[in-house]
Each structure stands twice: as C-alpha cells, then as structure tokens.
Amino acid sequence: MPIHVAILKKQYANLILSGQKTIESRLTVRPIAPFNTINPGERIFFKVSSGPFVATAVAEKVVCHENLTPALIRQLQVKCNKHIRGPAEYWNKKANCKYATIIHLRDVCPTPMGPPFPPSHGPAWFVFDQSLSPAAFDVTITRGAIENSYVRIPKRTHTFPVEHYASATPTSNSKVRALPIRIE
Image (cartoon, rainbow, N blue to C red; front, side):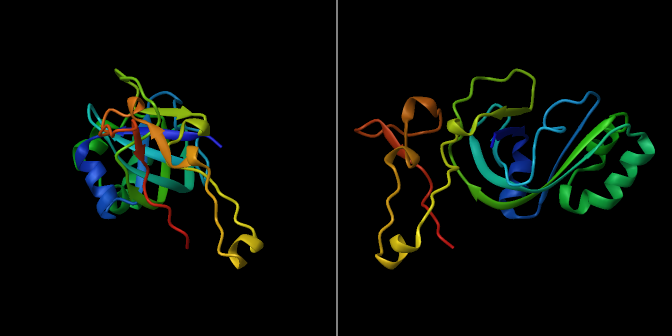
C-alpha cells in the first residue's frame, strides 16, 4: 500500500491538527496526484511548504471528480467547505480546475517526521512505497501473544536514521524514536 506526502500551507496544517479541517481537497487543471492515486486506508504525511512534517492521517474516504466546471466547483464548495475550511480566495483560484480529489481524514496525529524527501520545487503531492514510511506499519498480534502478554515489534519499525529527517534531533546513537505505539 503506498504512502502519500501532501505539501500544504501552515494554516491548513494547523486546522488539520486541531480537528477543524477533516477533508483535504486537491483541485487541479490536469489529472495529477492525488487524483486517482489514493485509496481509503492509505496514510498521508502532511508537510508544511518549505517547512517540516507536522502530521499524519489515514484516508477514510476518497472521492474523485473530473470534467468540472465553475458551477460544479461552486457545488463542491457549498457541500464540503465546512470540512475543507478554504477561504473564498481558494475557491476563486480553483474555479477553472477540471479535477478534484476530496479526501476525508481519520486518525490524525502530530508527527515531526515523514519519508525521506528532497525539496519539491513545485509539486504538492507525492506517492511513495510504504517501505519509506517512518511511522506507518502493521504488526500482527496473535491470540497467543495477547494471552502471554508478549508483543514484539521489530526494531526497524520504531527507530530510523536521523540523516533522513531534517527536523530530527540527533542522539548519541544517531537514531530517533517514532511516535508511541497505540493499541486500541
């Protein structure tokens, strides 16, 4: 399953982290990522434009629209802006877009890291192989492990080389810990 990096302005990242923005929208003139490249259940890392990674979330629901007109974009604005939180200037700027990807977010968590990522100089959405994810991983816990109070998580899933993360603080062993693991 791929992972995604979304570049966005700091004010939108703050709205996502506060729970006020629950839909990430991407409206484009051409069919570029994330259009038809993201599916429910895939992880998104949010990175502030020219800044650090700040959050991660999972795509709960994804709806793609094509052949949009200004009138259809206005309908999207009326229907979704309560969750997108875009100001009027955002919608005015997007009035002539032909493609839209509407991503409902769940499991939003702050994080100071994301996949190894070079400066982008333009594109605002990237798709990577899951093996590059520093925080998203699945661990199968068997019934026996639960009954015996034993859970082993491989070391590579919770420590990562510092040199991959500009926002990481080096430690004596050049590793940085990911977010705490939460079992629900």
